[in-house]
Amino acid sequence: MTVTDPVLDAEEAEQRRQSLSTASARNLATTTKSVPQMQGISPRWLLRKLPWVQTQAGTYRVNRRLTYAVGDGRVTFTSTGADIRVIPQELRELPALRDFPDDEVLAALADRFEQREFAPGDVLVQQGRPAEEVHLVAHGKVNKVGQGEYGDQTVLDTLADGDHFGDEVLTGQEAEWEFSVKAVTPVVVLVLSRRSLQQLDGRADGLRAHLDRLTRSRLKPQNKHGEAAIEIASGHDGEPDLPATFVDYELSPREYELSVAQTVLRVHSRVADLYNHPMNQTEQQLRLTVEALRERQEYEMINNREIGLLHNADLKQRIHTRTGPPTPDDLDDLLSRRRKTAFMLAHPRAIAAFGREASKRGLYPGTADVDGTKVITWRGVPILPSNKIPISDHGTSSILAMRVGEQDNGVIGLHQTGIPDEYQPGLNVRFMGIDEKAIISYLVSAYYSVAVMVPDALGVLEHVEIGRY
Image 1 (cartoon, helix red, strand yellow):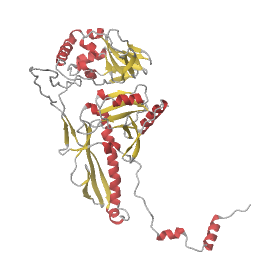
Image 2 (tube, one colour; image 1 turned 90 degrees about the vertical axis):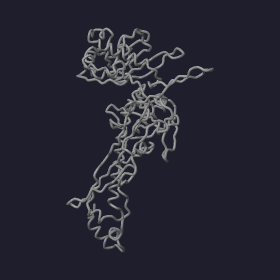
Image 3 (cartoon, rainbow, N blue to C red; image 1 turned 60 degrees about the horizontal axis):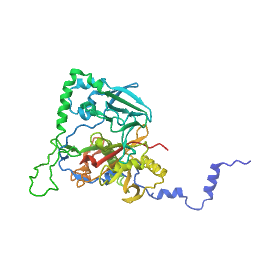
Image 4 (cartoon, rainbow, N blue to C red; image 1 turned 30 degrees about the horizontal axis):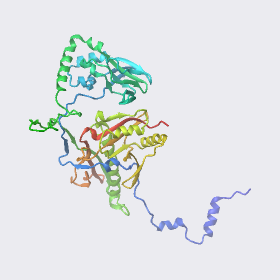
């Protein structure tokens, strides 16, 4: 077997070569280059599809009709090992305890809640039995099951972590359960019985007075949304006395201040001066910096605790999946809670999970062309992907549905255009100077916010399981 030396072979080939080599020729040639690429750029559908409203003063005030809020929020718990306890102040999220000032009474109530655990399929309360207990769902998911119009059993609602039912017991009303409640998953609930409530004795005097005031306030005329009613007469004839009325407004409407995402871009003067052909180095640095700022802007508009859509959806507009994965039934429930839904926003993996559930039923969602991109639709509403919607450690996510625009009382983006040194609408680049190391600095700022005009403009399907096959 003959062993050849690759170095000698190369030298021999070089001696036999009769033309200029490509390696040598490249020394006299230029290269064709791409602009700098960035993997973190996403479609940013939310920024593209939201109508943007000029916010000249940096603050946008959402004026609404007066609403008699009675409390319908979610309760928060603490746990020590397997022992779960409700935070006393969180009991104010119950309708009957909204604005109740006495923390000592709330602490006494919290101490009287009893922890109970149920397996899937267990019945927590039975329709037709006396309603004697307040239930707080600490963990898990339950279905409220009631009788339909034609006598069959139907799921009226799905409750999960932080939800509650039976709080009418606090007002002293004696009634029967109008529905049954069954566990869908393993469930932990905290229960307060009427008997335990009565054991407060003298400390309950302030509570009873508070409940009496609440009952009187509920006698004020209001519509189904809790807004102060506008008195109108209709269907009459002759000359009756017509009702006089006025439209009352909220005294302290919410104001949205523009948020900001900022960074300082630094470029050495030698780079900016000498290395600008065929591409301007400063422009390319700025282009990628702006892309990163816009990505952060969309993330904050979804996840920020102050302005983010996931945290600003009204609790009545938050629903849970019936079985875990996002089924066509779940999306129907989500769409039915608002008119003129413009689009839904979901993580790509949540969209894939919905596709699997639809395929199991032999359903094939339609498609639509949105800005030159094919996306799937449900009931004609586009489902747009967004990787900014988080996925929890348990493999669950959320799906948002929204009506958009000021004219439709929807969700709107807020920005201010015409700012100094504007580079894009609502984004400016300001020269900050050159330091002693010859480094040029630019302040890059994006100003933005997002507002929900009325509660039913935005809905969220929560606890969407994306990993079940």
